[in-house]
Structures are given as structure tokens and as C-alpha cells.
Length: 270
Image (cartoon, helix red, strand yellow):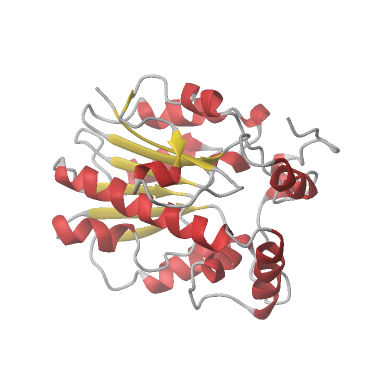
């Protein structure tokens, strides 16, 4: 297990700062890794440094994107017409609403992120599609997000909803109670709703875990967890096959393994 060299950063100290092109932004770095255009030179420098240490990272982010598309497809095939993308990041195409509307043209989609840079991008990019909304909200404060969703009549929780939480839970420290966050949303979801998550795995190679130690004590700190702990967060859901496994196993059997392992799961509320 990775040893923590510094304690967690206080919740308020981890809030993203307003737009500054001179400072790297994790959402823009991810956009760069996906081949997007909403990034700056400083973000590309960080992305290239990450790739120099873990070149397979570019493949992994696309595996996660493929998993998102599969999860949305499964939800729309089940008749779900409303979606919440928690910790959305910049909505690089193909994104949730594009995927959902291939099968459900009237699908409603809400993108939620606590980063004002992401919110600004989302709000600008999503001004045209009717029924697609961006919200500024922190998943560590689920009640505030749920209040916005209900008060603005963005989601009807009497009907099934699909929620995606991709690459966000490992930014939630243990003392911020990730299981309680999922439970807060689960308790509002109607039977037949879907939840899809990805989470950094402690089964990642030692050299990758060592690189991640550098995030300790920073606003970008992560906590990779064992698959069994990630699965414990899904109490109250039916975890669909193949279960909580590396994301590649949700896609195709011929995809290569990666030293950084991103566990993935799709589950259904009975």
C-alpha cells in the first residue's frame, strides 16, 4: 500500500481556482490526453510529463471513454432518458448527451463539476442542445447538488436515472466518506436506475503508485483503493457482470493491460 507522506489537504483548500492560463488545470490536462482542444500550453506540458512516466495513460483514458459510452448505451437500452454526469470534466466529444441521444433523442443530461473552469467550458459548449445543463457542484456535498437538481426541475427522481462517476471518487479522501456520497444519490434514485463508476486501483503497479505519491498534500491528491473497497461503496445496488474489474474487461478481451489500473463497474438499483 502507498504510504502517505503528508496528511490530506483541507476540503476548502482543494477547491479549484478561477481560470488561469498560466497554471495547469486537471480537467484541461485530461482534455489534452483525450485529444481535445480546450487546453493550454501549461496543460500540455503536464500531460506530456505524465505520458513520459506512463505512456499507456493515453490508451487508458480512451478505455474509460469507451466504458462511458457502453454504460450510457446500457442505460438507454433499459429505457432511461435522464442522466447525471458527476465530476464531468470538460465534455470532450463523444460525451454523455451525444451518446444518450443516439438512442433516446429527448434524453435530459446534467453535467456537474466543482471546477469553475469546467463549468465555464460546459456552459459555453452546451448552450444549444435543449435539455442539456451544466451545474457547478461538489460531489463531496451531495445534498447541495441534489437540491439544485430538484429545485431547478432538472431531474425527475420518481423516474429511473443513470449517474456516471468516472475518475472522480479517487479524489475523495476516506475522511470525506465516499460511500456516503454514493448512498446519498442512491437513496434518491428510483428502482431501475443505473450507476457507472471508475476508480483508481491499488492493484496498479508499484512504479505507478510511487508516481502518485507526488500528489499527496496537493489539491490533486488521489487515493487509489483495493477493488473490494470500491465494491463496498456500491452497497444497495446490483453489480452487473463482469463486476468491479479493470475497465478494459468491460470492453473487449483483446485490449492490453496497463500498469495504471482503473477499476470499473456498472450497477442497477433493484
